[in-house]
Length: 227
Image 1 (cartoon, helix red, strand yellow):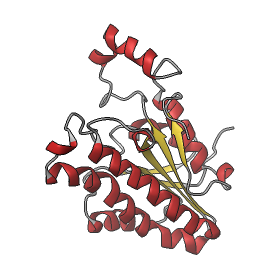
Image 2 (cartoon, rainbow, N blue to C red):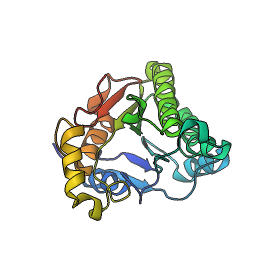
Image 3 (cartoon, helix red, strand yellow):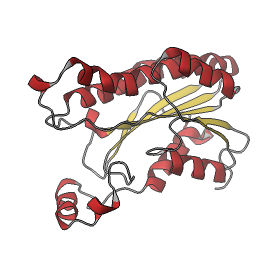
């Protein structure tokens, strides 16, 4: 099926990073008019200004990614390290959602898709701040998702892990035998997911085909995390 987003205006944050490029490419191929945004979104004013400049937004892709800040025991975690992932991942999600919802509610139509993390669904050592921020995203999506569902606005989250991107999986890592072996042990699917597969799932959630999902966090991790 082609042109699944024909006539839709789609705002993609962090369009040059993580899942941004694959999303922009696929969504444009499916007929969307994409507003590719970059730059910091760590305060309310920046988020509101972005939505205002974008004008009509039929679909918001909240691609809010950051390093996973691993390797620090909770007893050694300082205040700055604790707050950093919340400022990068949680605050912008709220401010962007709050800014874009009024127009969607008025039109009685809209989609918000969040690229989240499966670390919110499965405990990992030395990732307390990052995991907590990702779990906060899930809680936010669950709450706001059911709040706006009666207005025919769908808010859902892709809880991903082990998906190809240069930031988390640079070429030098991908060629290491130890990494390949670890991947086969950790991920039931035995491989990384492709960015295209991930973007295709986001496309489904952004399309008119997904009107009966509300406030869901869908694992996308090759079986590494389940709900």
